[in-house]
Amino acid sequence: MKKPLFNRLALIGVGLIGSSIARAAKAQGVVGSIVATARSAQTRKRVAELGLADQVVETNAAAVEGADLVIVSIPVGACGAVAKEIGPHLAAGATLSDVGSVKASVVHDMAPHLPKNVHFIPAHPVAGTEYSGPDAGFSELFVNRWCILTPPDNADKAAVEKLKAFWKALGANVETMTAEHHDLVLAITSHLPHLIAYTIVGTADELSEVTESEVLQFSAGGFRDFTRIAASDPTMWRDIFLANKDAVLEMLGRFNEDIASLTKAIRRGDGEALFEHFKRTRAIRKGIVDIGQDSPAPDFGRPHPDLKLPLPKPYSSEG
Amino acid sequence: MKKPLFNRLALIGVGLIGSSIARAAKAQGVVGSIVATARSAQTRKRVAELGLADQVVETNAAAVEGADLVIVSIPVGACGAVAKEIGPHLAAGATLSDVGSVKASVVHDMAPHLPKNVHFIPAHPVAGTEYSGPDAGFSELFVNRWCILTPPDNADKAAVEKLKAFWKALGANVETMTAEHHDLVLAITSHLPHLIAYTIVGTADELSEVTESEVLQFSAGGFRDFTRIAASDPTMWRDIFLANKDAVLEMLGRFNEDIASLTKAIRRGDGEALFEHFKRTRAIRKGIVDIGQDSPAPDFGRPHPDLKLPLPKPYSSEG
Image 1 (cartoon, rainbow over the protein chains, first blue to last red):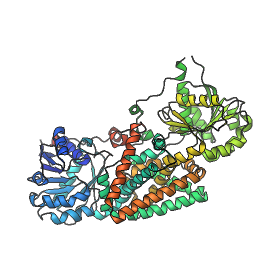
Image 2: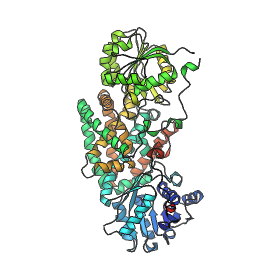
Image 3: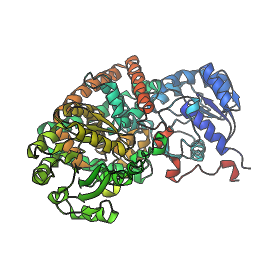
Image 4: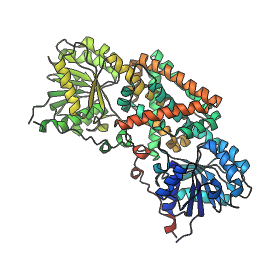
């Protein structure tokens, strides 16, 4: 049997992402053992019940003792305090990483607290669902998804390669870029879509002319596609918008210009401008399906069997 | 065997919706025979090849002759001209319906051309995928989806009940409301989400700092959920925005107010306001899943087998 990539993985935070890492790392045999901790006693208890780690400990400091890989999977706003706490306890030569959706702020908050003999390599697996907590994770979450590493310029090459191998073993494709570029890319591919989804779901909720039950009932017309991402963890997303403020505000500004120009086309009845725009966006969808980042199944992969409502009995056979 | 609900169904337009009606009506035995027509010779040929109708004819006038149910399934902007064309050829006592996503404009455009002895009952099945054309339809499209009828005040009650029974046989739930209320409900549940999705996909496409391949690659962060609806038929959607202009502009105005207030919260670093908003929208998602209008499957029902990329071989078994 091949030696595992890392002897001891310490997981700080065991929600959707942390628990998926635990499940996948165990299934793939890439770590010798897993020690986990979480802020709340309730989560620690659940992690132990689910058997996600070999050991569940009460403090972050205890978790990192002797670990050669530490992954912090918590809302980005909490990363600075955790770095301060674990800094003095990290093993020499250990790799410290995270899974945050914003990278420059995480580097800014964590780096000052870390000893020089630790490899700090921030990471962001671009994967998730709208569910949270240790029960929500599953070992296939990262399969065919991208994990972005943002190693600093002076990062140890061997340590970066080893962390890459770890994520590849979990099924992910790995890309590296600077923290700043990451934050710009994610502002448009993730943060702005979430902000807009949160907005429109709130707008619908406040209408007096249309009842809430009508909004739910007729959501298959498009609205439901927005509600999934507007159901994501509120704490995580609050932190993301505060941490990636500049890039999000920049993308919001451009979005506002574009929506103003489509609004003008509608107001003026300019069908040609609308048609040209809509034709162009269709091609982008095709690109996403072509590279395997979405399923082309009809009805967006919502299988009808799940609805437990097959076609009614044929009309003619009833009589 | 029970007598079918209608003897002869005439379908004008056989795209995603029209061809799904043909498939479902046939499977359920609710019509004696189906005659179909489409504007392009190519579509008519394909409809014949797929065996979607008992008869495929070349003109709208020929299609409606002797039909007791006529369903027009074409972009809403084309409905007026078709009504003018078929008006003189409709059979006395026939029911004429449509499937348009806007109702007041359809009534305004079609009603003046229709004889008094025809039951005009507009309808809108709230169901669809991002695909178009006769090949895209499937018989289960309407199962557990809502079909909204907007009968005029003086509509014949028996004719309305008969059309309701038709849609119920196809698996739909049926609701009736005024055309004006329909247009307001759909403006928020469907038209505004589409407009926003079309906008943001366009915004992403125009960025110079982020490459198109990066946008596609990292779309799993939220963006891909918008691209599906931004891939819908451009002609159909151009017509919808022009036909439901007032309600769409009204909803856009409210959306703009709401996004301005979230933008302000981000700019000021007001985490509490963001958190409270995000907590509220999560509850709405739960409502949609609870009433069966979406699947709660992890990863939005995108099954991993479809990706043809299972977990890599366990790391430890390679050595």
